[in-house]
Image (tube, rainbow, N blue to C red; front, top):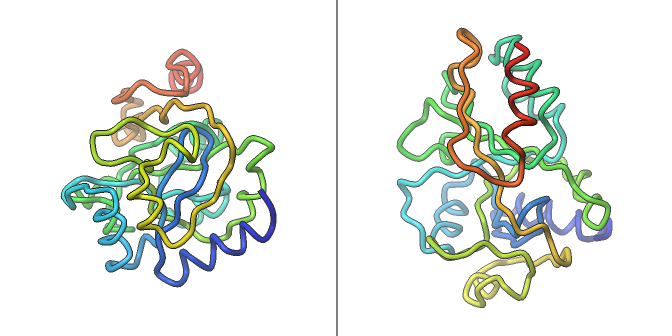
Length: 205
């Protein structure tokens, strides 16, 4: 991927567009997390009901932490060890940030900070967050190549970026909503990140 791809991606997000793009796991759909019309289009393209939450993806950890200043010290320290990575982290969201991504539960925010391999490392320069969901029709298989993304999704997007063949395993979903006070955590979906590696970090706190 090139710097032009990064520029076009950021412009698409900023202009209210919907993009198909590669991540560290599978192909994703992205739009501005604060643009209601864009979020509605993303869900329409994906044929997903609006009561299903999505995640907010930052392309570097520092701006992600800066956007969530209310995170406690224990949770923040764990995120510094876990991210970037093939994780979707569920966090408490007492201020209702990025409400359009939260679905029916504004008190929970899903956070992604991908660990970008060399072929798509240029995306690390994207300076804006994106509401992100996998680039598949609701209930369909994840796409590890651009060709595996349903044609209706590619046709419905404003920008399509090809990052080659990806790992093909969706992110692991880990729940840290009760981590700050009691150290409790749970894996809600097995995925690309290893549970044992998570435990080595999270059980330390």
